Image (cartoon, rainbow, N blue to C red):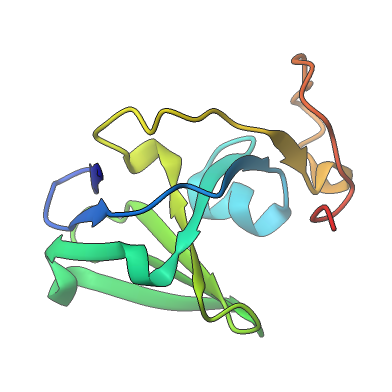
Length: 132
């Protein structure tokens, strides 16, 4: 089990299943949502994610037609995103993990949108879009 929480700990969650992948996303929406050069998300089965506190503090924002992002209403921490076409999956902001997930990022995605002031210097694979 992996536990996590927002910055103020009002929203807390547990993941009761495997993390299927972790990636660094450089798309413009993720950069703006996180205020950083990229975001790091872990893909899990929606049924494996359980909110343990603060479900009433979670707010949702549709950042594009298929994507809904969730964040804490109190501290603003980005927590989750879901894609309408993949209802069985949810992506959890890896920076909100309280425990070591035991897996590491596998790739950089949407590098065609990366911040011009940031250079990727690791050896992870880089993809222009989401890898097929």
